Each structure stands twice: as C-alpha cells, then as structure tokens.
Amino acid sequence: MRLSTFLKTIGAVTVLALSYVHMQMQIFDLAYLGKDQERTITRLDQQKQFLTYSILSIKSAHNLGHEMLREDSGLQFANPDSIVLISSREPNDDLQPGKTQLSAVKKNPFSTIFSFATRAEARNFE
Image 1: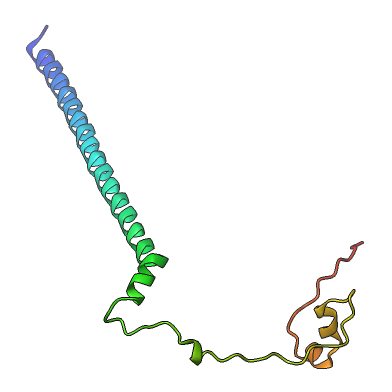
Image 2: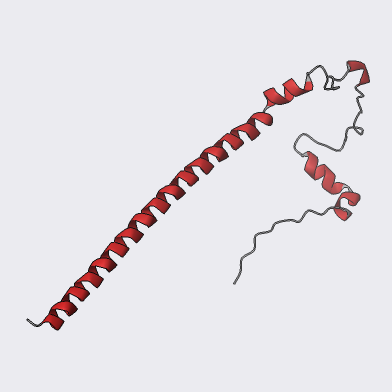
C-alpha cells in the first residue's frame, strides 16, 4: 500500500469520526434543550395552576363575604326600612285556565309592533 493511499484513507476515517462526534454533540445538546424546555413548561403549568387557584379564591363567595364584612370596607347590609316594594301592573283578567301568559301578550298590539323576536317555522323543501 502506498503512503498517499494510506494518508487518504486515514484522512477519510478522521473526517467521518469527526462528523460522527459532531452529530453526537448535537444530539446531546438537543436533549439538554428539551429537558430545559420541559422544566420551563412544568414551572409555567404550576404557576398557571397557582394563579387559577388564586383567581378562584378571590372570586369565591367566602372571600367576597369576608371583604364585605371587614371593618373598614364601608359596606353594610340593606336596612329593611330602606327596601321599597313595587307592585306590578294589574292582573290580566283575560287569562283563562288553559291559556298561558304568552298567549295573552300576543293579543296586545304593541307587543307585536315592538317585538324583536322571530318565529321559527318548519317548512318542507322540494
């Protein structure tokens, strides 16, 4: 075997070995990056759960009642003397036992003029 062939073979083997080592280093680097991202995701998920719990505890009825009844809140329960009762309009005598309130409202012409509701109808398409 000649010296030039031997040097070419050694050079090719060295290049292949270096490229293999470089690929292995990239694989380990990506693995470490994946672990770091996994830790970051876990930390963010725990932080999200903590914030969700905090928000739900702030909105809870227990916390709202506690905030309302604090000494310096300035809030108080309504005094029964300050509650005003308002009677509704006169009862409708047109209602019969079989009719509903909705059918009585349909008789009123103003309710049909100022109504924004639409009626759903089933039709057969041919």
